[in-house]
Length: 295
Ligand code: HBI
Ligand code: FE
Image (cartoon, rainbow, N blue to C red; front, side, top):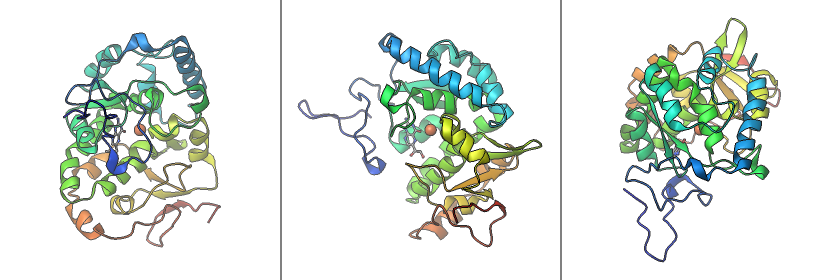
C-alpha cells in the first residue's frame, strides 16, 4: 500500500488516525511496505556531526542509568563514529536475533508497523533531527529509533517480545484496542524501567535517547514508579509531550515472555469504552516502588 497521492495533492498523511502533526517524511518514493533504501548520501556534514554529538552525550550518561543489556547491545553496533549504515547493523542483528532494520520515511500506519515487527523487521526513520530539535522533536528521528530502539533488538528475549507485540497488532485492531496495545509499547518499549541488583535501570528507547529523561526516569523523586502489571498498563494513558508521570518497572526481561504469551482479549473486552487511568494516578491495588513527590 503506498500513499495514494493524486497528482496535485500532497501525500496523504498515512497515520491520520493518531497523528496530529504534519508528517516530516517524504512518502512519495517508498515501497508498498513503506520501506525505502537508506539514502546515506543525503546525510549532511551537520547530520553526521549531530549524530556524533548526540551519541557521545548519551553514551557518557548510560553507566548507572541504562540496563547492562542495553549498553552491551549498543557497543556491538559500533555506531559512535558516524551515522550507521543499516546494512552494517543488520549483519550484527542477523547473527544475534535474526532481526533486520528497514529505513522508512517516518511514522507509518499501525497495521504496517505491527506487520514489520511480526516479521522481525524494525522500521527506522531515515532522517536526522535539526539543530533546533536537539532535545525535543515530535516525530521519532534516526537517532531516537537507532540509538533508542536498536541495541535491545540484539537481546533474544527482548527481540522476541517485540515480535510478539507485532503479532498482537491485528487482534488489537480487530477489537478496536490499538490504543490499549500502544500503551504497552509506550510504557515498556519506550519508557520501561527494570530492577537490577544495583537498583533501577532504564531500558526504554524514549528515555535512553533523551539526556534529561534518562536521568529523570531513574533518579528523580517526582514520578511514580509502580511494579509492572499487564492490565494496569493496558488501561493507563500516557504523556506524549512531557516526561512520564509514572514509570512501570519489570523484574527481568524474562517477565516480558509472560506478558507476550498472555491472551489480551479479556483485557480488551473489559477495557472497551472505559476511560483510561490518568498517568499520575496511584491505585491502592498498585505495588508502589515509590510514590511520586508531585502527587
Ligand atoms: N511508525 N515509523 C514508525 N515508528 C514507530 O515507532 C511507530 C510507527 N507507527 C505507529 C507506532 N509506532 C505506534 O502507534 C505503535 O504502537 C503501533
Ligand atoms: Fe520509539
